[in-house]
Amino acid sequence: MLTALQVLKEELKHARETFESTANDIAEEHLHKDLGGLSHPLGATYAHLVFSEDVIVQGMLQGKSPLYETTWKDKTGASEPMPAMDDHWSENNTKWGKSVQINFPQMKEYAKAVFDTTAQYVDSLKEEDLEKEIDLGSWGKKPLVHMLYAFLIGHTYSLAGEISALKGVNGAKGYPF
Image (cartoon, rainbow, N blue to C red; front, side, top):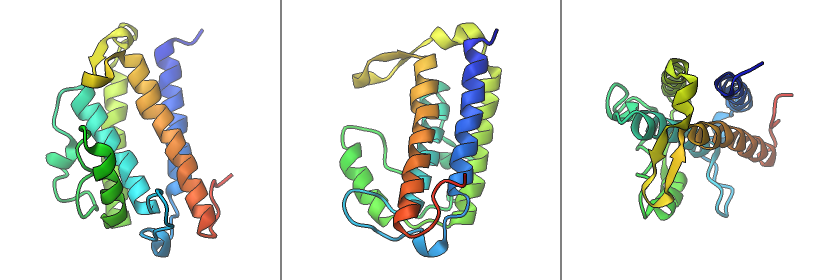
């Protein structure tokens, strides 16, 4: 029988494969195209996932500085990092998403580093670690299993869907399958 940790590892791997195979071929001409409304351009959507995962895994879960502040400082492929997840995040993120410029090949290298770091962290966990409570401030306390499922796996799947839809609106094929 599979353990909860084994299921989480498999789901994270599958979510990552879905995201990467969907986003891998974003065309340069679509990377910064603003489709109007509240949606972000494709490049900002991709960058949002990577920066978020970096902050969640390095900062919230491990208490470390995100890679974009340390080993990947000024090398992420984004003209500026995603804004801090604070009380003004929603407003600041909307502005950031409409203005950030992405060097996609460089961003994919940063993504690989973030995803590898996440995999190393998840591989280091033991089953009993999943019940550890993470203090999210005004969002309350959540068990690590919730953080991994909702904030990593669920977020990755949802942004794969968003990228698929944005590609479709741009006239490109969304999901690769």
